[in-house]
Image (cartoon, rainbow, N blue to C red; front, side, top):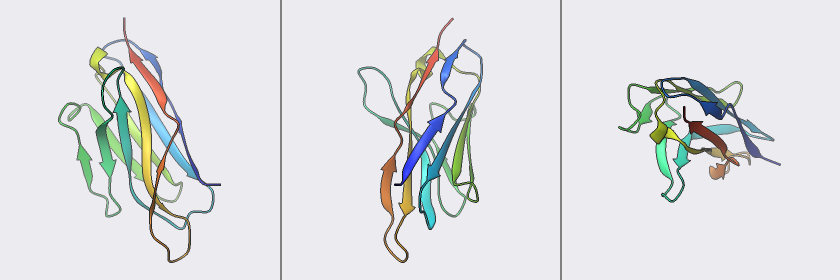
Length: 121
């Protein structure tokens, strides 16, 4: 069974930092793009950051300069380092990845269960 498991969320004061991790488990032959989305209460899910297979990254303007995304293909893991957190960063953060689970097959889209990040004093 293929799944994405997130960790690292929690409660942090404004200006603080958190590091999210997302690890893909199961039989996986390769990873395509992998990244993070977030959904605040009453709002639509939005892209935060994504790392493509060739190593390039795309970071949302709202977090540029504060958040950094990195990936470790050998560990099938993506990280989101979040610095200078603001109350408006409060949301459930979801990991998303394109995974090839069949040899020679296509990439399929997978989502993690989400991890809550709350920025509050």
